[in-house]
Amino acid sequence: MAPGRRDCAATSSLMLILDDFAMKELTKSQAEDFYELIDQRYRSGSMIVTANRSPEDWYPLFPNPVVAESALDRLVSCSHVITLTGKSYRALLRPDKALAREVVTV
Image (cartoon, rainbow, N blue to C red; front, side):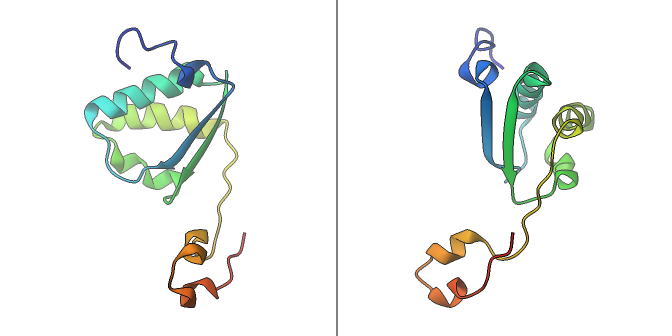
């Protein structure tokens, strides 16, 4: 994180929600910022992370495998992973209602 941003809402809030994490590869700077964020929140604040990939598929998105292992180990070690199966809920909102007729299982 940039100097002076260590006390931002992301590190001091009771709950942090990362939506659509792991959509694309992280730059070196993004990966380092992510590691610092996770390291600062580790065991001190709650987080909800949503992703379209399972946690084991997140590692290749980091340019440095050591940063990936450190950040993701902290993130996943104390987590509860909930995997949703079925079609995306967003399909229900699409104009093409043929997809909306498919059942979403949770």
